[in-house]
Length: 441
Image 1 (spheres, one colour):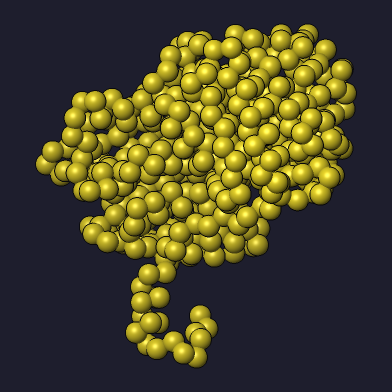
Image 2 (cartoon, helix red, strand yellow):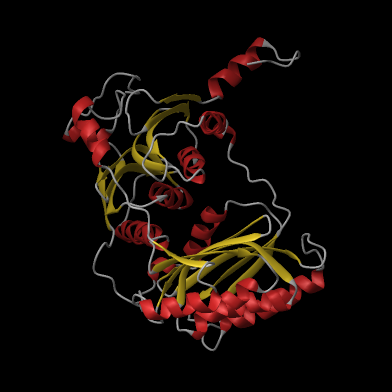
């Protein structure tokens, strides 16, 4: 590291001590890249580390977290979405540099766009009306993400002015956008809970969506359609002797699962001291030892139930429901509104959406069901594709989660590539690995 000329030895020592030490190893497993981070502990630092990895669309197959005093040690087993190791040197360098800077907190650079935050009651055709209003008000949608859960919808939409191509700064136009979108969200029966806000601030989209749905208290609402399979199982118990609350989550594995759970624990102001994350076939098993920011464990039954409800909601919000449709077409004003109107006219409900613009191309992903949440009829899907364009709108299968090769390697060489300290594992099965790193105990 090169130091500025004015940096004295004490400042160098402080910087060295506070800068996380990152080690990336591709030699331990043939099917996973090992990422180890040693850093000073602070509230939210685990979320920042997980965010770095998930923002690159990497899958975290296993993880071991341990904190001792003011220091913490995180070990992640990561692959790309196809289950392969990370071998691109540029990506590896970016991971190392980004994780090395997490001690100073994650920042989000401004996109030069106007952010619209919407929450309200979900219904068929709502997004069609939202995007029609934006098109009518000369707002180009550059990027957006939409989540639905328990009959509620949260959306973060980034727009620019159609004529100037820049941020919308006209206060009168902003007021008009807010008024018309609020009226759309209210509909006939959502006078109280419909909410819209406009912001110029930079933010992490998915973390903000979790915060919006948490504020909307989606976790307290009754699902419109009860699903009996693949529901997450969450348990919370106190370990009085150690002063921890032990949280266990079992559910179907999927992309960004760890981020969603840790994000909600962080936003509920809990610190994770120890954790073990494991995956087996298509199942995920997450165990956390947590305390409140003030150092206390969960202290009441209502608080315990709230944590269970919130973590179930965190898992379910991004769970993919319905058929995945991918649209790739040259972007133009009103395109998104037309696509959504076609969905609405054919009785399709969008349960989740990811809207993006790359150059002059719109690349969008939609998850659709019928009007009451059941699987959409394949004939209707084909009818919609014909109207939009068979070559533009395609049906895509969800990526498969495959852990068999990693399981075989774990059985052959042990877990983690490190001597790792997890209190629960220590009590239950005394987990130690190959000694690449030292325990914090």
